Length: 358
Ligand SMILES: NC(=O)c1ccc[n+]([C@@H]2O[C@H](COP(=O)([O-])OP(=O)(O)OC[C@H]3O[C@@H](n4cnc5c(N)ncnc54)[C@H](O)[C@@H]3O)[C@@H](O)[C@H]2O)c1
Image 1 (cartoon, rainbow, N blue to C red):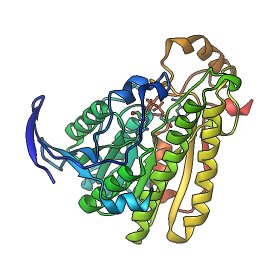
Image 2 (image 1 turned 45 degrees about the vertical axis):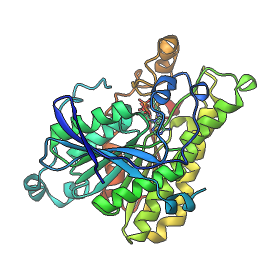
Image 3 (image 1 turned 60 degrees about the vertical axis):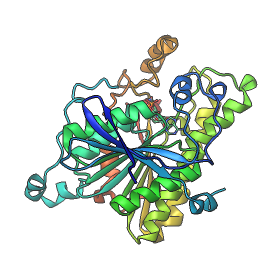
Image 4 (image 1 turned 90 degrees about the vertical axis):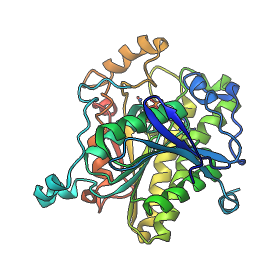
């Protein structure tokens, strides 16, 4: 799989590539203003998905690519928390000393794919999964640079096997090829956390550009479906019980004020109903599907000067009078991924400092 070598900073990196020709045709002009630069910098080469793999105990990365094979094509035509820096992986010794209840609340031994894990909430969740005992963590993200950095940092801090696949969640062929590569390397995943997503706000419905509307739905809703489909199929093929955690939003249940954001709200309502539908369909396969619906969180998505005035209003409408810290969804994420929530499926868990009380 790996065909060439190069030095990345102080690391020795070996490289190879996954062919990819059926990739999303994204142009910078179609991108939301908040994500335009990140996405346009990371156009994916034809037929190949860049992959960075850190194996247990090794300080060097295998850097390469996964090919999108014909079968894949045919199947589907930075942080504010004071705790953010430290990551302490759960050791076998500690796990063995834990009482049953605490063990069941861990993700000990599980293989976990996290989309949007390069930064923000998804990145914080990758750290939490490492601390809660994950055996392998695989980050899928469209941002090559941040994805590489996130995988390298988490591997350095934990010694765990961490991989990064540069995957756009709109690209079914790329997703299928990447999931196949994960299965080959680590076995079928136990957990998918789908945190990749974008936001548009302060755009009136009557002037909303249809291309932008389609793009956001494609990333937030269709991306959630494609990731769930690929991982769900891998779990089914291995007859393995699994947990899928979709990051939706309180905006899927209430309309935010004062900003107009019809498309984002509709996309997240779609994610919540998608989660319920998949939960009902896949309960017979012992695959659980639940949503996390955050309120306003203090991530890069919201650290935009243009939103400063509105943030005051958001806080005033939130009983806790603040935005959530980036790590304040971690406990819920680990719980939903863990066996502790095994009777829970089709749920939408709102975690919003009380915003939806009013
Ligand atoms: N921040 C909030 O206040 C808030 C509130 C509710 C819900 N959410 C949701 O939480 C999720 C994460 O938000 P965040 O604040 O961490 O955002 P973020 O922008 O900090 O991180 C999003 C990550 O997703 C990746 N991504 C974007 N488009 C992608 C694509 N097409 N394919 C693959 N990866 C892609 C980005 O590269 C980035 O690493 C999103 O789904 C968002 O809608 C956020």
